[in-house]
Amino acid sequence: MPPKSKAEQKAKSKSAEDKTFGLKNKNKSAKVNRYVQEVKSQAATSGNRKEMKDAEDRKASIANKKAAEAAKKAELAELFKIVEKQQKVPFGVDPKTILCAYFKAGQCSKGAKCKFSHDLNVGRKATKVDIYTDARDDADQTMDTWDQAKLEDAVNQKHGLANNKNKPTDIVCKFFLEAIDERKYGWFWECPNGGKECKYRHALPPGFILKKKETLEERTAREEMERENQISIEAFLETERHKLGSNTTPVTAESFAKWKADRKAREASDMDAEAKRKKEAYDRYKSGMKSGMAFSGKELFDFNPDWAVGDEDDDAMEEYVRDESDHEDDKSVSNNTQPVGVAEDLFEGDDLAGLDLDDDDEE
Image 1 (tube, rainbow, N blue to C red):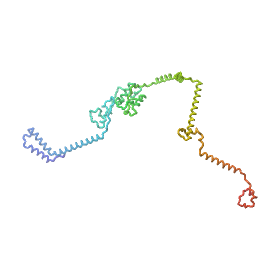
Image 2: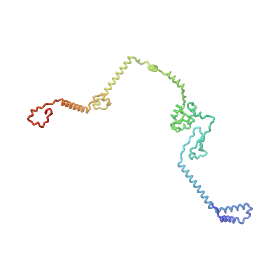
Image 3: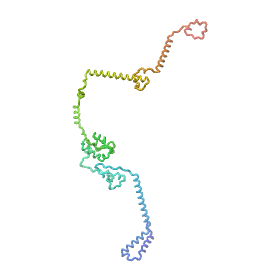
Image 4: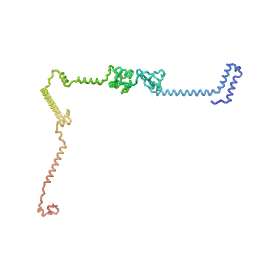
């Protein structure tokens, strides 16, 4: 504020002196001195009451404006807030090592009571380095060196009991079992059926036994044993022959020839019966009874080859050939004729001036 004029300051001091005029012991009594100071302060601030009121009004309006803006932001945040999924804590993991999703979105209202961490750098904090173990041991460790207990422990730590408990089905994931059978399962294995969102269980089925990987020596011994136990074709036939029993007829040259002749006779009779059936069907077809006709075009031609001729165009072709041959005969006859002499003495009395005679005759 600008400094007051000297006249206003004199008026204030004069007003204070007028109010304390006639008081005794101004400089000796503490009570009187305190009263004098209060009168002076009242006189000094009497002219600034309007300005103080204006300052208070401005402060109140600023506070009201801030409160309105905060209420507006809260309303917008409530209307357009993002619904966060409920966080799942893996088995054996401290929730304080996981950042609160609601706090990250600015919506957590639990404060210190929240079981998750409100430290934005919690994910960036590196774990304490263990100088007593070699990190390369875990990196080089594969499933080839695991036993049954190690596999069960790894599955429980990686997938957890809580994740498998909330699955909609009790069926074990086939990709999980294939990875274990093919020795591809490990700490960094991810399910190709959606990873953690896979709806099937990633847990070992009851009674599962991990198959030990076969070494080269074991495979060689197994193949050699299989070759030794392999049965020959002669032994197999002999074994099967004994299984037939004693109520059978032995196969000899005579019995085989008789069986072959009977088979040919049976095939011939079957062919005759089939031909008879087709002939009856063909007769029914010619008589107009199309029901029961089961011939294809090829079968019709094989059954009646005469159908290959009998086209209307064939008759026309025969007539054409016959006509051509007749014309050829006429030409041959005309070519074989000899020139005939003309008896001119018979026409002496006639006028032959308009007739054309051959050169030979003129000569």
